[in-house]
Length: 140
Image (cartoon, rainbow, N blue to C red; front, side):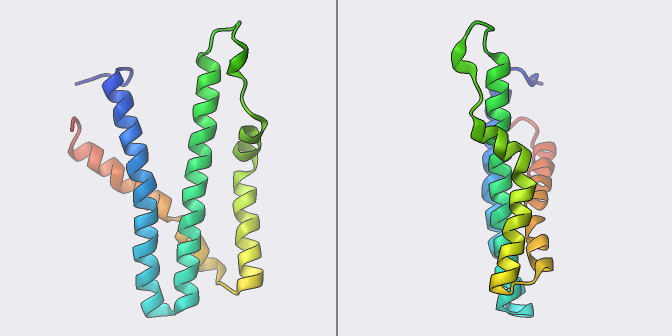
């Protein structure tokens, strides 16, 4: 079995990140369609909005961690290893930005907050599916 520090393992992480990203949006769209059929368009829109916000959250987290890891791995005398200020902002305030977006959408579009919160769960569902896939197919 390959260790996690090998290039193959690094590639596997990148593939899993890509799967999580795509699956978050796919699950969000499928859930939004199903919910729109049974609960109405506003609920479906809320699920879709929540899953898109979850997708942004995932990408902001990934960008931040990649930038911090690159800076940490850089030699001490290298000046190009600085982390952009926007990366710090996204890392520190991403939950606040999501909460603000949910509030504004709720306030002005009258989309139920619960539907957006449930849509945010698309990221967790996608991560769960990819994790189970990695267990079932450990060295694909």
